[in-house]
Length: 191
Ligand SMILES: CC(C)(COP(=O)(O)OP(=O)(O)OC[C@H]1O[C@@H](n2cnc3c(N)ncnc32)[C@H](O)[C@@H]1OP(=O)(O)O)[C@@H](O)C(=O)NCCC(=O)NCCS
Image (tube, rainbow, N blue to C red; front, side, top):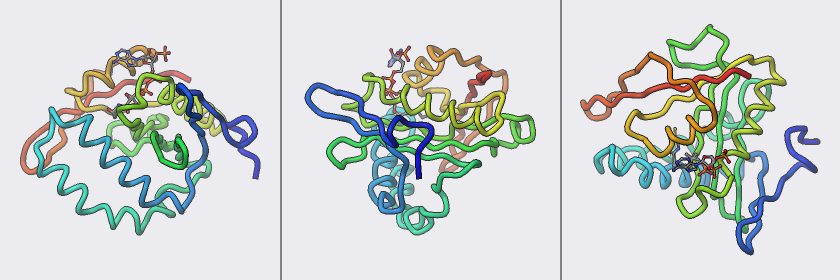
């Protein structure tokens, strides 16, 4: 079936000599997708979480792989795309048409839940391209605004979200990992 959010059902970004292909996720991506998220977590949050948090997440990977087809299908309530370089997933986005954060639920916010680019592929436009697909999809499915939640100490991502025009909300949500509290902050965007 045609993908109306992409040209010719897929899109190519150029990085030096390699071509980055952007496409919808499919059930065959399950293992690679979950491993990709876990590995980018390790690099992005190494200054925030202790080792036990990563080990715990990796231990639970098999459950996520098992439920992958249900969790990451694309329809008018959820979207999930990947960027791949020669068959290897190097970027991923997951979004929902309704935010599941209690604070934003029922207030008309779509949610850019996850955006993870491999370190060697950051800063070359993959994140922006995936975010633009999310925006197109969210608008078409009736959203007028969206939210991105991000760890307060994830300064690199926060700078990108600010560059994209996000308004820092006053709301801060605690996130507990092994009894330690981390703060999550939120950027909101009008569509
Ligand atoms: C944050 C992240 C998603 C951004 O994706 P990316 O592909 O690296 O970003 P892009 O190359 O598309 O750049 C996006 C914009 O931010 C700017 N930018 C990139 N890195 C930046 C930085 N460190 N500081 C300020 N601006 C930056 C770019 O100039 C670009 O601007 P433009 O959209 O006006 O052209 C990506 O770096 C990432 O996956 N980081 C690690 C995981 C993570 O923290 N994810 C967020 C979880 S909430």
